[in-house]
Length: 631
Image (tube, rainbow, N blue to C red; front, top):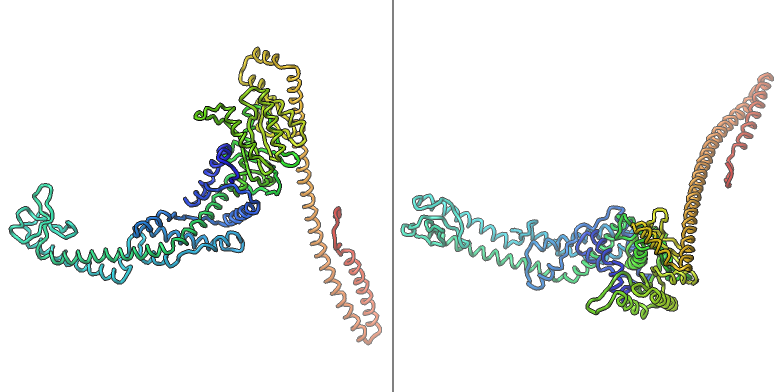
């Protein structure tokens, strides 16, 4: 069973995203491979796929580009069907083999263990490549020296051609009066000269054609017939040899067909990985953290199809709160949030980098099912509500602990009270199945359900009450008001109409909306305070890091200065010791009392100096270990 059915793929616009990624492929093969990417439910397989993506990222950073990868499948089909090929098409086969060699050489590296194992399976047909390059010239023609026989036949043709040209040139000179134009041309593969009508009665000629005006005959003089015949024989022999050469090349191609097709599959996969990496670099996409459990935690997620217009979404769902109810105004971003949640799961399970923060975490779901957008069926005579319910019935039958369910505007399209009751029942049933669920709604009972139920998280789309417009940001933990009256006011609905609408609210409804609005305002204030605190904490962290960096620099400078001072002191000590030894030896050698006294005096001075140097050296020795707070 597929992770996502056709309705879900359409709801989440998964294939549109694949089409966008496929444009980054280097070949038609790679584009096809991207378009065929399917979400998988095997965590190990998904991790292996992402490991290949990471290796490809490193390869691309180091300059890897797949380059041209010709799609030779139509050529293989033609060769098998007809047993013959235009030589120019064999050049595409040669280009493919050279692309295999180039890619294999680039990726067969210990840096890329997964990619290296993949390209090791490539088997470039080097013998076939050599045969094609040796036989076919860059213009796509069989080389005249492709075989000894062909080379001999071409030499014979050139010789006879020269003889014929000379024979006809002499004929033109001898019979100027009969010549319509002094040139040599061809008709039906034979060399002829243009003569005047009536010339055949004056010399022996074989007429092959007549001009439109019937004033010129294209004729072959009798002395040229034998050489023309021989030339035709050689031309036929050349064509037979060319057919034999082509057949030989085609036979070699078909003998390698199985390996070539397998290599095409490998190259398509490599190009698919490259396309995903190129896409990731363009949109700043990352590889998410894959989780064992049923978890979906999007951090600063940007919907791929919105480009620069996308407002980053941060929302989470998972044990113990396996359901999230998203409320808020129309055009506030609820549907985009639902689509982003489902789409990111499909992309992650297909091994596609996500335009989001690296902190994004995604569990693996066996099934993803959705009911998003309008889906009326004229053929089946279904209303919007009936169409939604038909789809939801199928979802309820399939829902289990491995299912992610996405429901947009649950309970809409019918009487609000009945829709709310039905919506509550559906949510309660989905909770009982263990499914992970995200729901967007305007219905107040569903908002209360989210507030009161411990397994349900309440989220809302932020609405700026000052500008009376949505911000498209998700606020977790607080239900949102639909703000229908505020939006109507912004759109220019007269004040009298708005006042009448407010009077139609029941007291309880007004109170509920006021509570929701107050909670939203408090949540917005708390969010602003949180951001300010985060900014302060970040600033504190930066200051601390700067302080520690400068402290480390000071320590390094001190160590350097102490080291230099110690080296100088140690050198002075060595010099003092040498002088001391010299004075001792001198005192022993001096015979006179005066000289000995002078030597002893100098000896005491040096000893005192040496002791002072030792004390200074001891005081300068740096500590072996620095502790936090030392300077």
